[in-house]
Length: 622
Image 1 (tube, rainbow, N blue to C red):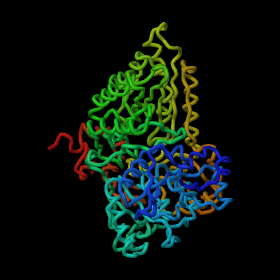
Image 2 (cartoon, rainbow, N blue to C red; image 1 turned 180 degrees about the vertical axis):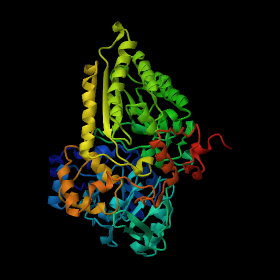
Image 3 (cartoon, rainbow, N blue to C red; image 1 turned 120 degrees about the vertical axis):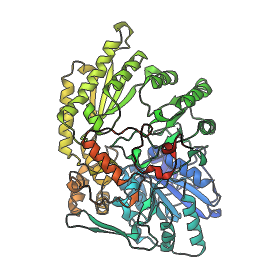
Image 4 (cartoon, one colour; image 1 turned 90 degrees about the vertical axis):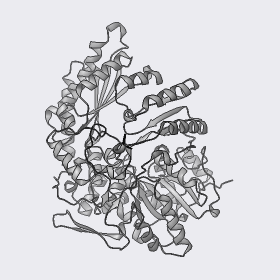
């Protein structure tokens, strides 16, 4: 019987004690004394969010297939336990063994969103691991980061020993083998980092120096160690059917954000939306085979007892065998009490037909993501969606029995005008009008409900908009008010609802997304003054961050509102994400010119991803 790290008294005094005791269905149990490497995987947010993340489940399964590695998990303690652990000096512990994190060989932290950065410092501090990599001794775990935010690791580089750029299934085993050999030979921490730096996709921040121009832009970024590579190319799985996928996902005892089997059907996207980082860093699109997916659907539902299966991808409609896969899932599982969830579908006749088969129409709303209110701006962002597509899809949905529609937009996109902003209200009104025009009074299920939401645009690395100016907080709010005012002028105002994201949070996300190494001091200062769980609106305190920028002498506008020159060196330029900077420049200029680029299946745009020799780039080629 495991001895729990927290006493019964503490567990009874906190919210959701099940977050901290482990023991979930399919949890892996090994004897820590009989493995060579102990690896703790961390999601720097509360358990309920972290347990819903597919990437950690994949890595957990991948490492635990090896007898010589024991992979365990840790999540951010919620605010109530955080206070107790600090007061009682209880070191942060892994769920499986309940052992302190500081006793592990590795602490692997997934970087899914910028607003989790202060939680990384919480994890380190509660684990009693020095915040700065330079201050960690031989007895401390190696802290490694990965995930989408690792494509610009610079704002948090000081806190990490190394980063893994790309998909975990390719060279992680090689990295572990090098660690094991170095440990056996009695090698030092630095010797291992030198061995690691030679592995493709591995970045060791301490092996690089940055110099700046007087205006604050980067002058040079150069290796200072002979083992470090000039350019780090992302790691990518070329043949998705050749890697193992989850068969026994962990099943929590408490309700988490996504309580279902997640079946990943492909990686990447063919669409080329110019604001979308994921669509660029995961290129090229690579599909999993139909038989592979059928097999894993069976195994995962059987091993978990879940009553819902969700298809995971950036754009499920683009999966070439979607119809066959969905028909299989309906035939096999619909009558057995298993719901089928289909996110990321484009709303067309096929999708609506499928959705009417797999879900209770009365309980659901349909989601469209026009992103922009006018066709001009949709062309700028290369959305590949016309107003006719949206209204036709809405009409088909209303005939199919739906009467609730969600529309997602962005405000603050490059070249946006007042007409584009007001177009959000006008398009929402047209969707509502479509319902009343198409559905006879006697066939209506009450009023139509159209909920329009706008987030504020954040330029991200490795997108054509990485050069773009970002709006200030006041500009964002002014734009939201223009949209809100236009909504009030609509005839169907009572059927429409409009809401928007927090502007202060967006500005901060923008600074962290395109930040450099000078941001580490700001993150640390904010954390020390109480910033934590910044992605949770009830815990986000903008004043703490503003004071941190002031204390550290760092300008927000330098990272947000400043226009970048095409020849500027970016903090992330040493990473090769597959898409070339020349391609991104072309797309940026095409955006300004309001020119559309066809999707990958229509015509190759020469983005650079063909060098990986697989995926959509090679479809139909022998």
